[in-house]
Figure: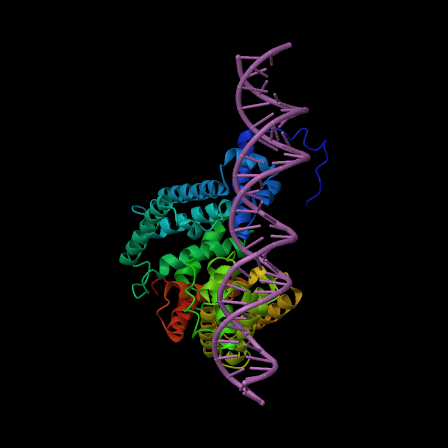
Length: 193
Length: 193
DNA sequence: ATTAAGTGCTACATTGAAGTGACAGTTAAA
DNA sequence: TTTAACTGTCACTTCAATGTAGCACTTAAT
């Protein structure tokens, strides 16, 4: 793992593409930080096939790299919400589409936002997304899709866990199939009818 | 937070009880490490009202402290399983009792075991508990409590998440009430019947 | 061919946490 | 009262990770 790179190895991979390197650092960083929040810049850089120094050329500090990763996830979630049309589409349709979208987001950006809530801008954007989903759940209750005798916040707390769990437990499923499992579990549970 | 302790402050709290200090370090450590796996020994000691040096007198290293905490959780889970009589009691009864017990365990020892699976002894004990619960789920399917068209490992992966979630989301519930919510969600989901 | 952008590599300073040692003071038990 | 068990405090050492500097090299664009 910490083996010294052969001098000739780098030739050919150098400057493959600056943009590709940037993306590799971000996605690899997201994956490694999700597995171990204390992962070092050096280990992330190595895993991304990039020198540690290169990371510091793009990001002023570790904090900056984390911010960029969280930003990427935040944006992806916002896109997922918008695409699902949570306010207009039929609740059953919107739910499935939202779940499928976020499952995809979780595969590329599995990082946990909760550790980044110190930043006010991040918190505000995150709260906006949360409110959007909460409003959708209210509509789902109103239209009879969800029970109304649920503890406050229970549904909106459970769903993210299910979406995270399905990626960890059933990674071989397509996002669509994974969404089937999540929605079925959310609505019907695992008990016999 | 890092304020210098007043000389007179320690008088009266010193040597209240060695055993109490030990327990405080363990439970406080469990709580803080669950919130932030990178929490320093110094911060844990401070939160537990104990000097950093005292921690090192009980535990040879940080690794040792973690091992003690994981050991405590492991033991508590094993007790929870035994108390629930997963092999003999009626499935519905055993499930509820197991859930209620583990919810209690999670409140005192919320640490995530998955980061400690390097140790072979820990892994073996943990696997034994997991197998016990898996066997129970098979029995539950056989007796018609759970559906049989579920993805492999889905139920046994979902239940721990639910038990963890209910503690984070509904901490004001008693363990019994929390177990009601978890079991109901597991079996029936959140959709209208 | 020349220039600009980007990268790898070696080396260095800084910082925070881990871990140890030694000493003084307190409390409970003898 | 004396002793043994703990604890707090100050003072280190060690180490890993962060963050910087400078140089040589490669590639794409002009």
